[in-house]
Length: 152
Image (cartoon, rainbow, N blue to C red):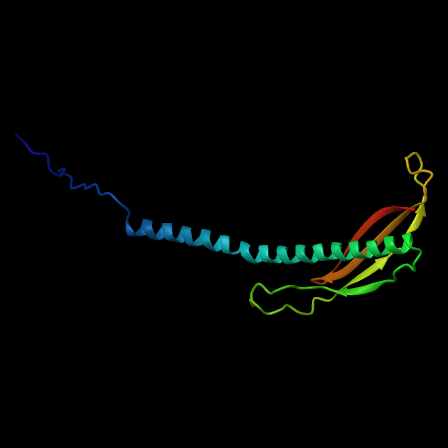
């Protein structure tokens, strides 16, 4: 009876990873982790930008409400004004407040009379009210306009 041993050519089969294969896998993993980490600052920037946009819409809505109130109660229309931007807490500095984000410039239009032809409100006094909020963000001028109709 013959016992099978290593081949006569000296070829040996081994299982597992070589050191080179493990090193290549670690480099690929490192590149994947670095790519994921580069998304974090992009996300923080977008959150800050969206926060300022939401503040601008809220300020414009408040100005629009002031216009509605002035129109309905025969008060003087609100004038253009500025409102400081609330920068919130810094992502990097923890509890420190951000500063010097500037101000919103709020410009109400004073509610102009409009004729709504062909609608149920065609015989009613209807007014179009608009409030525009402008600001500068990262060197670029930005603005939000909110409009609504008021019947009196």
